[in-house]
Image (cartoon, rainbow, N blue to C red; front, side, top):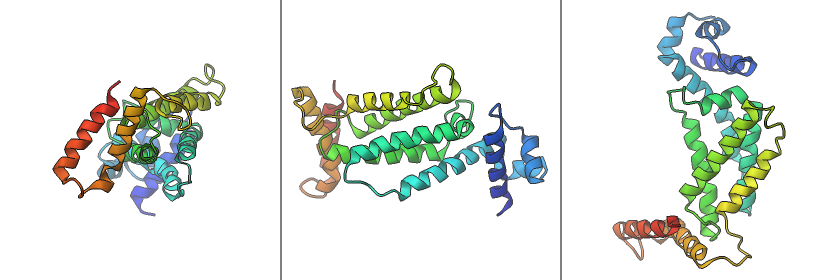
Length: 229
């Protein structure tokens, strides 16, 4: 293991054991046996090192998601994705707080990848005509709700002592963005679902019967229909 990787591993371990959720640069250097100039040469500043550590720990979690095979039911995959997100937060509270902390100026690449995986699940549901909203809007709704309930559970455990709250919020958010294929829906919901399904299917339509410009314009119109409440 090289020095950079060793520092990231050491910081991850220090964060996991930190009662306050913070680790000094001095403690980081002592854990690996390097001087501070080495740390700053490799990472520029503490924020960059913390972001790299967040990406490292979150990346291990995402490896499981990358390796997971899609089931025949994208809704079950969506539920499992929410539950594993909450479980990760509860198992790694300090890393999780850092990942979504406005104080951390460096951007976490892992957070972007997690959003991409979530959008992929919603696109599968869109193709089946199950979404009330676009996959992009749905991903934002789910991620903000999942993050909110996870942060509540780990930052205010006395106020939120029951981890089962996560499942209640999950089901409420899913109900808000998903259509029950077996139930009657309003004309507005039906139009939005149809538009969302067509948007999700546009890649399969090009280059025929539309060229790229035509497909882009059609996608814009359909998105406007899908997002109009």
